[in-house]
Length: 168
Picture 1 (cartoon, rainbow, N blue to C red):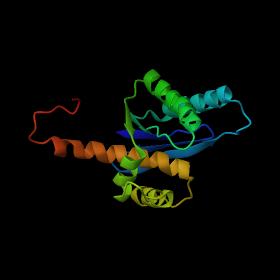
Picture 2: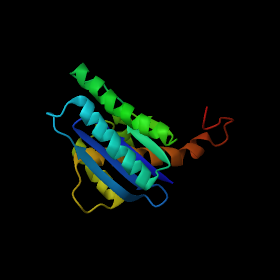
Picture 3: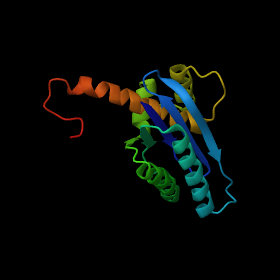
Picture 4: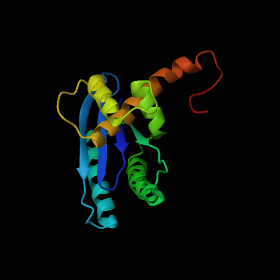
């Protein structure tokens, strides 16, 4: 099984594909877009690139970071646009999507839900044995994928002995 992790952003859109069985990096990158480019064109660029990546690598599942509201509410709306692009690509290719909060992701990788970006990036490098330099956006996307893989692998253990379906 392969998982594509998404760190949505309108200027820096990170993505990474991980082989869940071997916990191995398949492909990852960051799409860098100019703030001078208008939003519809940035969204089209993200759509075109993400669709191409999904068609080339055929991930089985998508994991994406949930929206959080920070100091600027308008930034949350823009983040919503890029998440919608990822959802659209996933729906078109019939890829199930799973969402995780930044706290869940950080806790899954570092054991601490308020870990700094450098700690998350370091753990991503350790988990996937990456020796090349990757951007924080790329590391965040890979962190979402790792969080999802770890969450899925523990689900049967957590549900053992319960009359609960994983879909409930």
